[in-house]
Image (cartoon, rainbow, N blue to C red):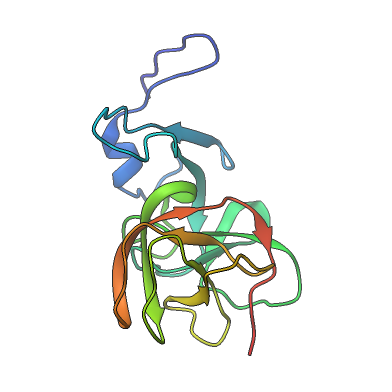
Length: 172
């Protein structure tokens, strides 16, 4: 593994961010901050943060994944404890290692019961673990992020900003 250390920062090959592997390449729990550094991107200040972990089951890109002990990620299944919820930006095979988006700009699969405006919030649920659900215009204890694109209704993969906070997963 070749890295360039510079003032506590280092670079990784882009393939390591976008391609899960069957072998562990980095320390579990490594947090990687990625900036678009695009002057035309109004959301550059939302540098994305990824955490390195292992898929505890097959996971689909843009769907919710909750972090369990030892940086193992599974579909939302626990509504009791506070936990970190991520949105993998690529598909993961069971037991593969890779980076999971937990804060900042990325894509999420969201189901809206009605229209969602830019800035509306969404949340993960135990009842529908394969997509995030709309959570209205005001942030709640269950909110995990906000949308950067409007959604008419139905299920769509859209640009979002994840808040990077621990929360309880909603259970209706």
